[in-house]
Length: 298
Ligand code: C5P
Image (cartoon, rainbow, N blue to C red):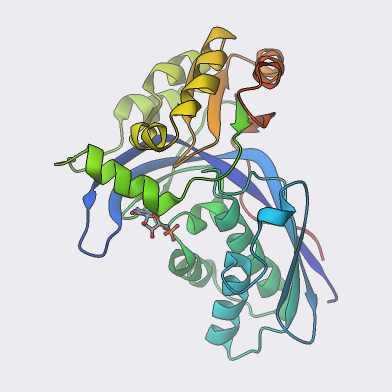
């Protein structure tokens, strides 16, 4: 095999319930992930050494060294199977960088699946998920896609049923927000956070596929922390509501903001209004759920 390309989705958290900091520094979560149809593609080809390249509008913001989760995925897989990770990984990036949409995690999961196919390691799904959990809390979900409840630090997944297609707009902000910094701000703002649990109303709304049922039960415990660090995020959130969004929220740890729309035409109008408002860098329409990391060629 000479090249394998894997397509992988972004995510939005439709519920992100955060508990107190654990002794290991992570937080226990009830994290309801929904994969959305904005995709990166990672292509793995044989090479003399491990090398990362990236293309796309945000390419200059992507680290090309061993800190990139795609590089770490190749290294972990190779180490487990006694191989040398001599591979060129090209990331065609469309997911906002450092935006709270798990773009880096997505590239880790995609690189893992691509290298597994290129090297013919025959790793089991359980082994791949194990490596994903080692790479980061959001990486297992990027592998499986669809919708899932993540517990523990978000890596222990239970698949969830989704009864229809939800239409979203995602507004990218200038600059990123550091996930550890947002969690630290959450700790400062929320002394005595209680143990997180999934909301039965939220799970029922996902099953119903009805955006009017989902809108009032969307929650993100990191939103206040993201707004505290970046107060200007209130601007796109307000513009989106005024332009007819059923709900608006910060996506994950931000700074991307997410807007739930009634249907696809409403999502397009909403995206136009957000773009015209000048409160965001760009606004993209996407629907959910979307499939997880998938080999598209090779
Ligand atoms: O797991 P991941 O490497 O994506 O986490 C990045 C950072 O986000 C962690 O170092 C930690 O500061 C924070 N985090 C957390 N609790 C979680 C997940 C992430 O505190 N459940």
